[in-house]
Length: 296
Ligand SMILES: O=C(O)c1cc(=O)[nH]c(=O)n1[C@@H]1O[C@H](COP(=O)(O)O)[C@@H](O)[C@H]1O
Image (cartoon, rainbow, N blue to C red; front, side, top):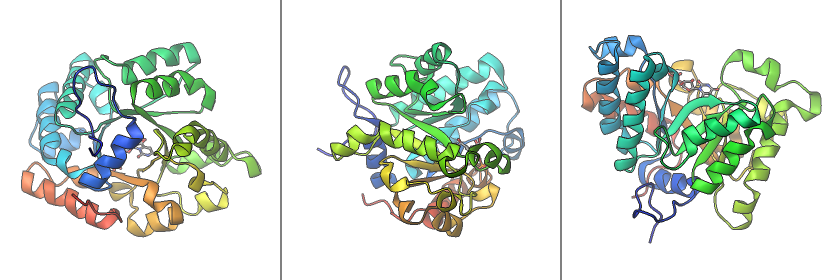
């Protein structure tokens, strides 16, 4: 039986995130779509900048974009700015997505000292947690090992993580390129690959992904990042609204391109609220950015 992307009989163990993501890519193509309900987008969709507007935006985006994407990536900050009511909308979105067999990556960029990291891990990756998603983005700049509680809990619950390596913003290089031949980014990539080694030995895709922006130019090559050894997904923001496209993906990632999951938010969402136009924007982004079209 082919692996499912999400729903499973009650009590059955969840398949590892890397396996579920690979199955979702085969079914729905290799694009991640970000759900970033910026105030300007809410206004363009004729919705109020309020929890009620957020709810209508999120449900409409899930319904139209869920079937078009390997995963949806809600941007947590844009829910947080509405306080507890915004987070309640995010909880509802994550639950509805799971019911609809749509994978979610909570873009929370969490990172903290180990004991606090345990609480973040439980919040985003724990079975039964109100905000549990299929994967969460993590910030390793308190040291990769500080993420251990999240790495371990993700492995235990069949969930995934995406660790920031080279971010799409121009300021990122001042930290991530530092360190000479053993750059900070290079060490993050090596550490993530080590987490995926057991899966690689079993011939399965790993569940520890990286974030590398599509805007990073030649940095993957110039920093000597060995993405071939990662055996995990590479989330690539920076396409669409931040200016990168298919050419930049090809130039930045080369042979590692099949691991790359480009992620676009505003460029797709700006086509709403009309469902047909929104769907077409997602399909057109997929045609441009996904070298491996869906097969079933
Ligand atoms: O982790 C991310 O997704 C992320 C990392 C990064 O390096 N750059 C980046 O833009 N992002 C996120 O990806 C989304 C990009 O949105 P758009 O520029 O509208 O496509 C935002 O939610 C960002 O916070």
